Length: 65
Image 1: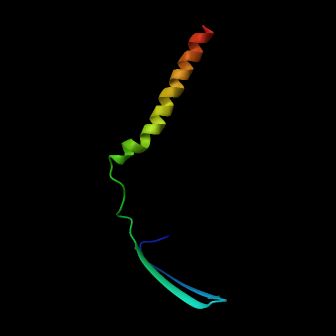
Image 2 (image 1 turned 120 degrees about the vertical axis):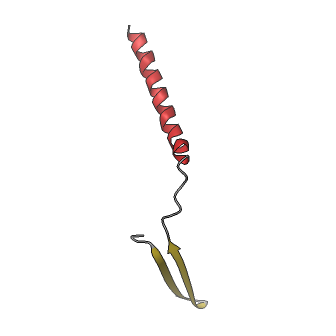
Image 3 (image 1 turned 30 degrees about the vertical axis):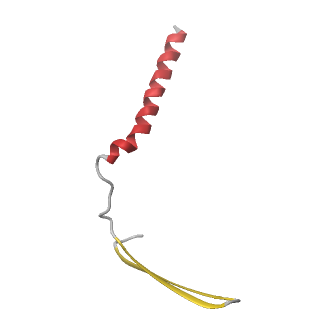
């Protein structure tokens, strides 16, 4: 979607059982963003991977010495 506002679709199917038509409309809005506290939930996997990576680097460094 390139803009907010109404979008409409009209589909017509002509087949062996006959003809069918379907209409659909939706109003696109961008005001339904997630709550700011969800940023923490989304960051947890990345922070966890960072911690595991730093731990692996520390173990590798101590094994070399």
